[in-house]
Length: 568
View 1: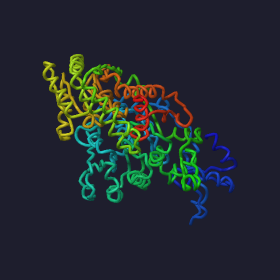
View 2: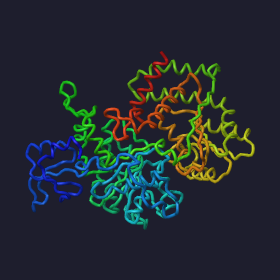
View 3: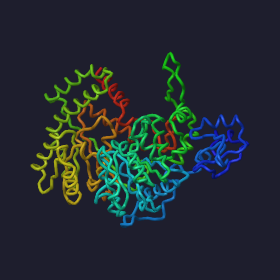
View 4: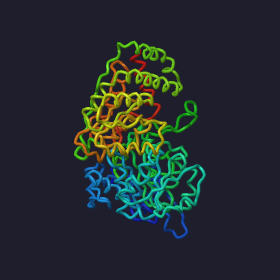
């Protein structure tokens, strides 16, 4: 039992289990103790009930037993079943993840698995569901639209390794008949339409299991998608909830609450306010300063939160499983073009961006950074031919990412002229249909010697077919390090047959490229030391680490501040 909770339970008799799933009942609790306990998220008191069985003060079992479960990957024993029904052998870290997921029985409610892209979270989740019989019962996968192809279709892990046909639900107009056509009773729905389909899924499907992919998309407790997922997680028919995220670095503690509440809806409170008061130093502002609103901008009860998270949140990085993935070698290739007359316009954009940097409109600041990246790539693509050619000659299979469509077209044209005897696939960009993208990715996967050229927005995420390459080259870096690492992870991921993977970044000195690379290197250093990181308020069982806020305006603000400093 966690130390900070022990004084509150002194003199109490704990009845376990109680009449409430996932809760213990406390007998002989004094009024004072009840008041204190009511400040805990998910704790409640019922004065009367018809049969008396549900009267009393109830506390989540996970809070009582907090700290009794391992908080790290190595603390879980590998699941004894080593392979999928298809014969695919799971790696050690995947089998440990399966053990973690399977610990989520009806009382624990669910889990949050946060691991780097490419660690095989999808197969771990499916394996755990298969072993516990959930694949034979109705189930629902919820995720971004880009993840649909990961879960649906004949090339998905679900179909290849478990014979499970997960069908997609589409459109804003729910069709109950669509839930009757799949004998496997498993469906995928994306976050943008989950609210419209909620009632139909609730009444016609009644999923016993929920898998929420890229669950960091649910960081806002006020969003409709979060409210809908919370309602599905709290439904009586839902027995297991598995949340998966490859970007598990929340900006604040409050970003964690929706994911925790969905995974364990009976144990983290019905509203984010109690969680915020308990763990994020929540306080009510004065009416003079803040109209009396609650703010949650601090850290409190860190030891208690760390202990509670050990029972629900497992976080690990690629650096923690070095023997399970190919060795990653990051290479920076300088492309000096600072003396080129073409750079004059680039510097003119930088000088003209001061007004946008000081603007309060985040769109204006983002537009400025995009202008810099776009113009810089236009210059780089005319000078980087030899770099791309050399990379293609060193590696039998190479993936090249660009920012713009016209850059991808130019790279393909250059490669076809300079790389003889090598299949050049692409360009793959936004005008290529999703089905054609699948065909081109499969063509690359099956080739012995090939180069594929893609834009980041079409193939940089949720694409696993590129993992036969031994190298990935990014002609242009994104301002958000997540995008660069996601692109890198299309190649550096579970299932890649190569011993080493080279990740090549083409960097032009004295431009924004250097700043973007610094952010990537910083993130890599943080990931390598995540197990030891314990900064107050951030180092929670190796799940939160100080660093980049992924995809958030605050990160854009920090980047603009750096740009302003360098311009000055």
